[in-house]
Length: 255
Image 1 (spheres, rainbow, N blue to C red):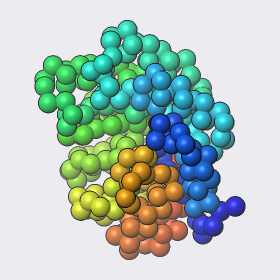
Image 2 (image 1 turned 30 degrees about the horizontal axis):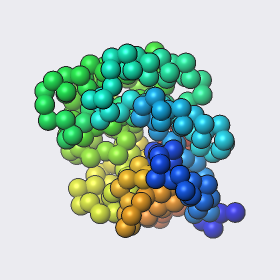
Image 3 (image 1 turned 90 degrees about the horizontal axis):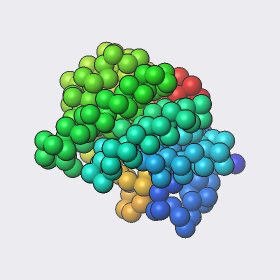
Image 4 (image 1 turned 135 degrees about the vertical axis):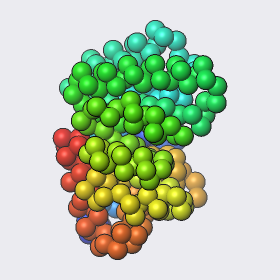
């Protein structure tokens, strides 16, 4: 039974991570009680993709995206990359998006590593196009380059967007969705973005267990904190932001 006055979708979380091993179901129940009626769990490699599929089978309100995060490529062989792409393809009918995947130059300063990120991301983008599924992008210090690589796609979500207002405007001009995470509660940069993102292309997320608006671990129920702040920034009732972002999530992910 929900205590909330409105319903919200957490469009990006990692409930399969070990951070939730001791109380995963309790975390999920807290989210439902808070009004988070839908959660999208994002895989980042072979192992987490498998766990994400298991979660989506267990809970009908959790949906899966399967991905290949750039930050794990340093430990992955080319064969493992191919296996992950094959895994995504083989489960295409069970998922609502491809990702997270993309470019992370913050954690990869060397050009050789960045070249591999680009090469792998091109393969993921091709797969997203082949499967006709939304591409969920992880981009850090590389948002403009990631945008250039996906600008011919029709279905794109910039997860946990942290780039410039200029690149954000280029993305929304293409009809791409901008997802703001709970870090907005602590970050002036993200609050500027919250003011600028058109409501009709805005999504909200936690990226749990990361980016908590409170001390310690993040969890899906905390998406309400981000939503309320974004509503204040936009001078809108929170229920209007909840209704719009939930409708947006249903539209892009075909929920």
